[in-house]
Length: 101
Image 1 (tube, helix red, strand yellow):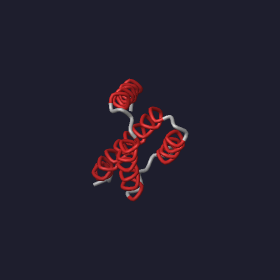
Image 2 (cartoon, rainbow, N blue to C red):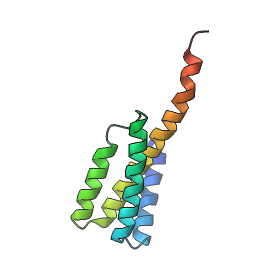
Image 3 (tube, rainbow, N blue to C red):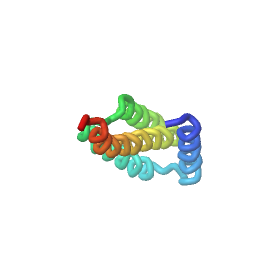
């Protein structure tokens, strides 16, 4: 992923979190979605190294009352898990092109 795409994604998540009112139920919903995606990609063996850590940081931020930061972190984790799923899908077919025929 290039930095510009990630930066746009993070900024977008921040804006969404600010305009969403930042309620705890919104955090829980987003967190659950990101965790589900993380578990799916982990089951396929493609979990990125810091996705779980980002989710832990999000929980800590939410617990300390910094809901805006927590939502941004959850969005980062969701983005990473989604990208890892795309990577897993791509690799599921790419290995076939590498086999000598």
